[in-house]
Amino acid sequence: METRANYIFIGLISLLLLFGSISGILWLSKKGDQGNIAIYDVLFREAVTGLSTGSPVQFSGIRVGEVDQLSLDPDDPRVVRARIHVAASTPVDANTRARLTLLNITGASGIELQPGPVLAEARFHEPGIPVIEAEPSPFTRLRLSSEELLVKLGTFLDSTIALVSEENTQKISNILENLERFSENINTSSAQFDQTLEEVNQLLNQFSGLATRVEELLDDQGSATFADVRVAMAQFAELSERFNSLLTDNEAAIQSGFDGINDIGPAVNELRQALAAMGMILQQIDQNPAAYFFGREQLKEIKE
Image 1 (cartoon, one colour):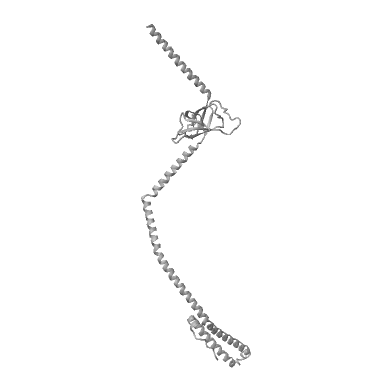
Image 2: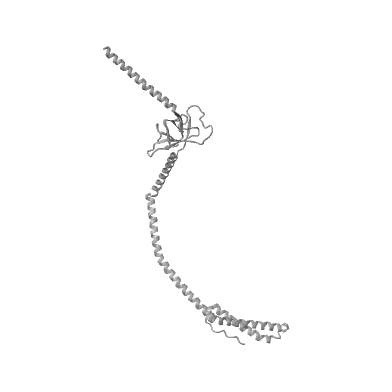
């Protein structure tokens, strides 16, 4: 019995030593790792869709660490605080920029660190874990733009559905029917319009021929007609001059008792005849000017 009890005791001691050795190794390795990593808090003022614990952290495209913890900021629940562990050799300073990046088409995300401008004294001065403000990522802007696009697309679809309602469909059908009838009327009116144009062309040709004949008639008979008119007007002017001359010559006799009335009588008769002839001419012109200018006989001279 004593031999068996000794074996059990020795086994327990061996297990305790093994467990202590493993624990010491793990503790030492953890201490070593903590000495080789740096801890930062990245603040996101946007949704961190696809980001989770263990998501990779990259610096200029090279993986340098991972996300250790995600939580809401206690001062502002709209802000997401992501605690990251990166290699201590990573050149992170106060000018380093951070943003959310899309890793693959499945929607998994990570954190991308980018070096900022090289400035003097670019170090974290506040005590505790350094904080990096994240910039809006292109993925987030694309997502917001896609959401706005979907909203506008939904509005467009609603408007389209309202447009193709039963009432509007009937109106569109009526419009199409009216357009069809209008096209038929245009085709019908086209033939009538062509016929009208042909008639107008014939009328213009007739008018052109008439104008030519009138011009020829004026050339043939117009000169003789206007010559007769000039002869009559010349005779009337001559009689007027003779009448004025007689009045001037007999002014003294008229004032003394109309002694020269017998000499004025023939002139008065000639004037009366000339006035009668002119009256007849004017009456004929007023009644039928075309017949007078183009179909009358030659004007006869007025004789005493």
